[in-house]
Length: 284
Image 1: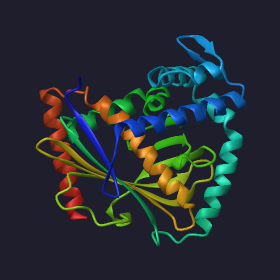
Image 2: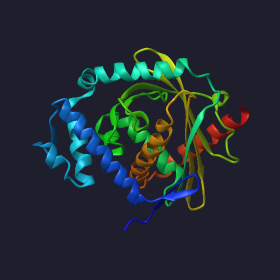
Image 3: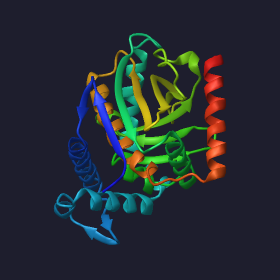
Image 4: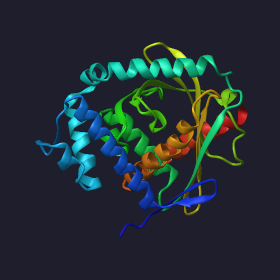
């Protein structure tokens, strides 16, 4: 039995771990069908599986099958395979942006998270691990609709994901921003605020979509407010869909974080980094 606990709330109501896993498995099935339409063979430990076999896999095996298949395909081929979907999603986001005012009438999708025995330092180590590995395997374990992932040490992430689990996969650049674009006032005494703007990678167009996550160390673990702020013309289904996306993503990410144990030097460096970022946030 694990010695940690993760609690998710949406609009003040707890969302159970069982429900999150149920939705996660549904999205794995969705991606298996997408791959089948593209005639992409999915393997588990090197053995190709039929769609029928894939749909009967337990969640743990579904994760491994999709992760090893994505890693085998590689980043360059993934971009080529999903070029038609990228073209469609570019058109959708461009229309949304053209019909929305920047930072006005944003649609908020908020997820609140409370952890017990998973600290902010452990979560930061997990983020470092994600960037260090910079592969397709680990992001695929975290969420089935992470088709592509590439990160640099400046905090920029390039992704292909079905944003908000809505329609086609989108090819996006997530670029760190400062407090000047914060869509809401930060909560009091927040330790770390992650704010980013989202651009269409292939067109370099601002989608007017903003992400803002707030993380605070507590005596027991960590308190997190995950936020995605959609432009006014975006379909409401994307807002709801991305709340589920965030719950799946952070549920898996936090479970990996629970197994990251900073050594004495890492603790000092991470605590200094948090203090520096907190001071910087407060001065903005």
